[in-house]
Length: 54
Image 1 (tube, rainbow, N blue to C red):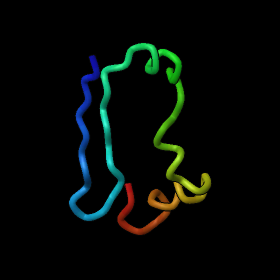
Image 2 (image 1 turned 30 degrees about the vertical axis):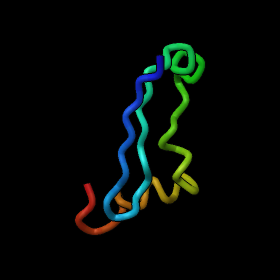
Image 3 (image 1 turned 180 degrees about the vertical axis):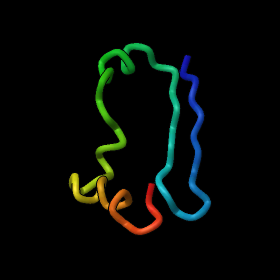
Image 4 (image 1 turned 90 degrees about the vertical axis):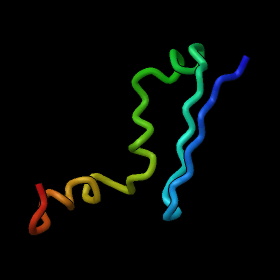
């Protein structure tokens, strides 16, 4: 049985799918999926250096 929920961003942002798949979750444990969309560490740190940033 496959249990899955999919979400689409209304403004064209990235889609998100959540799936009940314990074997796949165990295999991917510790992988940083959010790092895929970041070109480099400079892009990650940029909001901290901009005026009004955290």
